Amino acid sequence: MLHLCQRSVPNYINQVLMASVHYMILKFSIIFVTASVCVFHVVNTFYDCQKTDNSKLGNRQAQLMARGLPKQKPITGVKQIILVASGKGGVGKSTTAVNLSAALKSVEPNKIVGLLDTDVYGPSVPLMMNLHETPLLTRDNMMIPLVNYGLQCMSMGFLVDDRSPVIWRGLMVMSALEKLLRQVAWDAVDYLVVDTPPGTGDTHLSLIQNLPLEGVVLVTTPQAAAVEVTRRGAVMFQRLKVPIIGVVQNMNTVVCPKCHHSLSLYGHGTEALTSELGVDLLQDIPMDPAITETTDQGKPIVVALPNSSQAEAYKTLARKVITFLKKQEVPENKI
Image (cartoon, rainbow, N blue to C red; front, side, top):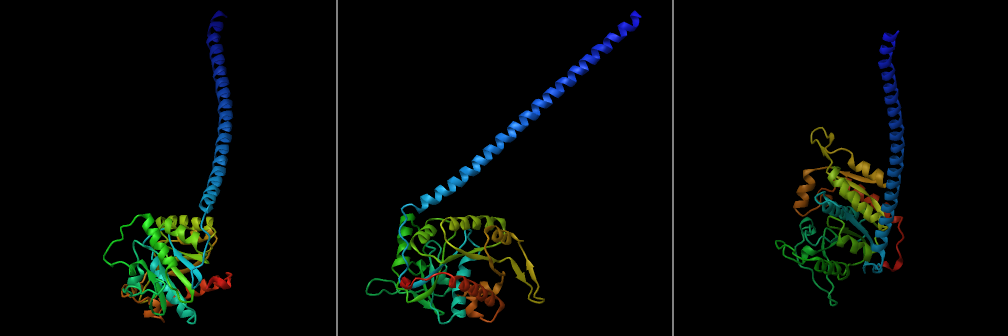
C-alpha cells in the first residue's frame, strides 16, 4: 500500500505541473489575443489618421498653390489652348504635339492652328517643323510666329543657336516663358497646341496659373516607370482643376509590314492608368520608323504621308480633341 502511494505521488505532481502548464498557456493565449486586438485597433486608428492627414495635406497643398495666384489672362489672338504633357521624358510628347497640330489643321482646314514649344532647355519644334529662322518683330516689339505647313509656330529654339545649350536658372526660364506667352503676335488662332517640357515644375505651374486652358492631353508609354510619372502629372492637373482630355499611348505596338499583325510590346499599364483616372484612352500610336524618319526630316507624318495609317491615327486623335473642345465654353472676348 505504501509502495503504491509512493508511486502515485510523482503522478500527482506531474498532473499538477501539467495543469499549471495548461493554465499558463491559456493565460498567455488570452493575453496575446487581447494584445493583438489592441494592436489591430491602434494600427487601424493610425492608418485612418494618416489617410485623413494625407487628404488634409493634399488639400492644403492645393490651397497653397492657389493662394495669391495671378489672374488667368487669355493670350491675345488665341481662342482655345490645349496642353500636351507627360511627366516622363522620351515618350514621344513633342512628336505627338507636332502631329496633333498638323492633324487639327488637316481635319478642320478652315481653322487656324498654332504650335507653341515651351520646353526652354530642349526645344524640338524647330527640327520637327523644319523652321530655323529668327522671328521678325512688329512695331510693338511682338514676335511674329514662323509658319510652315499652315501652322503658326513659336519656340525658344528660334531665339538661340541650335548648338548652344540653354544654361539658365529658374528666374531666367520664367522670363523667357513670359515672352513666349505674352510677346508673340498670334494671328487669330483657333487652336493653340502647347508642347510642354517633362516633369511638373515651374513651366507647368506658370501655364496653369496664367492661362485659361481648355484641357491637357497626356502622353505616355505603358512601362511602369513612365506610367507612374504620368500619374503624378495627372494628379497635379486634377488638383489644379485642369480638364484632362485623355491619354495617348505611344510606342506600345509594332505592326508587321508583311502580315500587318499588331504586336504589343509593354503590356496594359496605360489602360490601368486611364481606368484609375476615369479618362479616355484617346489613341494608341504605334512605334513606326516612318513616324521617326518624317519627324527627323522636319515634315510631320500627317503632312508627309497624309493617307497613311499612321497619319490617320493622329487625325482620329485630332477629331476626339475637337469633340472635347466643342463642349468647352469659349468667351467671345478671348480673341
